[in-house]
Length: 498
Image (tube, rainbow, N blue to C red; front, side, top):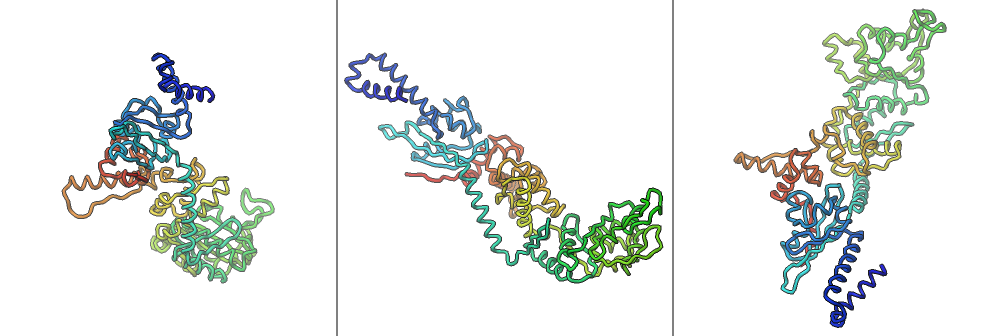
């Protein structure tokens, strides 16, 4: 730095009239070159990106910070026009072009291929005739500022949405937590809380993954039996030959392989508590009479035994099948169906209660962030995708997705680009395009194309990702966005001073 100061002082002296008389022309030229190298080194070491072009947009200087911020190399840009660089897709857009076209300072916010968000400020330098001789541009990485802004907006959005909840029902017991926003689920939970105070048999129906077991546990843990056992039997998982012995137990030596001392059955283990018969629709027809007999008086015989055992259990059954249809097809006993169907509770699929998706997502996000020591959150675009998806796997699918996103997403902000293809329409673009009314075919094609590029760029804000999603080249994306003016909505001119 001392040498640089020394060079500066020498230069100041050199280019005075006295200095010109003291130094030869060769010495002055050598000194000027030395000073120019010192200035280039200083510019290159600056932490702020600096990009300089001549009056026609030809790049003369691009320091390390500018190249790093834009995700490019000096070799790609030095000596090249910014007009050419934008056309080739090396850079997405340029404030320098704004300056040359308008002859006044300009600032833009833009995205770069490496995923960063930068503020670009360009200022013209005018010659004595008033024409632009150079354009000097500062490039500032504002990605972290945007991240903090997104975090703030996320928390504001959460607070706002929770404030709009008339009643946020949360029932906690050990490892489960129910959060509901939709009126349908509120009605179901209110009914479950009333029914929990009785011993009536409940039949829970609904598609796989809607949360039937969660409601079953709610019924148990809010009842007078909450301190007694909750025993679950998966009727589809136990082989038919072993089902009776598993449910009712067996006496010692009653069959080959039986324990000498015998074994207590699950129904007996549930005494004074709740017996949850999950997937009751999968139960073999041959076993259904035994279940019917047990439900009628809650007595049974162990396999190989002759002593009747009396128990006091609350029975809750659940199925994802249409039992009435199974009755017609002679796959399920009608008398057993009516014995189970004392209080029916149908749990709607997630696609019918989309108001719950946001709150369930937040619940699962909190759960898995804590489990894996992460701090992820969803931005609004990702939430929109979750709320617009049909969720064939229901709540279980949503929970599994959130866990996967927490585990595999490297960034703290979970964005649409991190979502699996089935949520975003195959290639990652979750958008619908349409035309209104009749028009010429070529006009309709152009309108659909305009919407497609516009919505894809709004979702990804990166021309390289848009190109990948739409299956075209990146320069094509740039040209189409310029043609349809889509970039003007997203690459915002923050300040154009006249």
